[in-house]
Image (cartoon, rainbow, N blue to C red; front, side, top):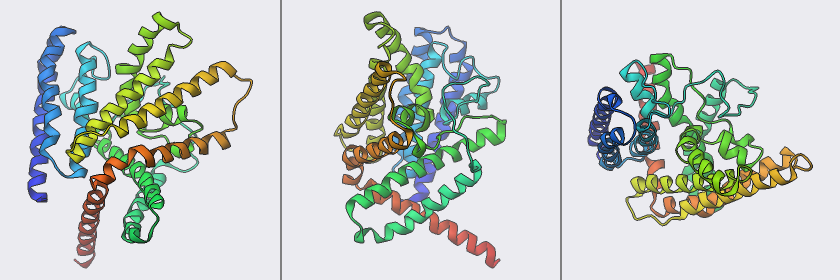
Amino acid sequence: MDMGMELKSFIKVWVLATTCLSYCYYITARLPKGVVRLLSILPVIYIFIILPTNLTSFNLCGPTAFFLVWLANFKLLLFSFDQGPLSPPPPKLFHFISLACLPIKLKQKTDNDTNPSPHFVPRSLLLAIKTFVLVLLFHIYSYRQFMHPYVILTLYCLHVYLQLELVLVISAIPARALFGFEIEPQFNEPYLATSLQDFWGHRWNLMVTSILRPTVYHPVRQFSKRLIGSTWASLPAIIATFVASGLMHEVMYFYLTRVRPTWEVTWFFILHGICVAIEVALKKVVKDRWQLNRAISGPLAVIFASITAFWLFFPQLTRNKVDEQVIWECSILLNFIKQKVSSCFIS
């Protein structure tokens, strides 16, 4: 892979993406909401689906596909009907572009979408610790040949969490620094989850949660109310949301592997959707009469997520050697940073 050509392709992709979002801001926003606006946005959605195929690097293709194909396209679909974070359009173009494709959610004075826990350690220090642990992981990978496969998969679970959180935090820095946006955290310490519902709904990748709620969960819940009543309407909505997440992860996997989907990752999310729905149903039935202590339910939820990830989430990636490509690319990046730091000290 020629990194010079890859960087040029990356710049071209984002120049075209910015042009498309400018079109949405100046032209589409002036059209009446509904079918007319949706039809004007469909070409942009198609372009965003195609753009990541021009990239082959995991560290460039992965985030680009996530930002454009998932976040931006879902937000533009909501925007077609005058809903979501892009409605009403912000006063400035670059505010609109940032809200459309970056993993940010503006903090509201009254916002129940997240359930932040008290932080006894400052977030900046936590971020520094996580960065150190991620760098340490790349050194540990040098000894993979001496490790049990389950130990390697455990390290991969930690790696996915750390790298995803750091990528999302770094990508949100421009919006915070340039525009002074006060934004919600992208993760809320998922290792402190008290249940599967808490893990997926309030702690893991909150940007995805915030976009799936209005696009999938709320419409399905409203429809289910007419069929089964308000008490149980959330259950099919939960499962539908996890199915949508699974399908979108299959799309993300295609950009990374360029092979036909095996549907393993979809089944991972379907399984978790069913388990979360069962958990919610049990809570409705027993209410406050009985519940597991969080010291037990929390570790059980994290362990269940890890074991099912070994089984269904990672095989498609390891089978296509995406893990090796990630480690190789990150090693190149670390060596580049070391060289630059060393040259600065020498000079």
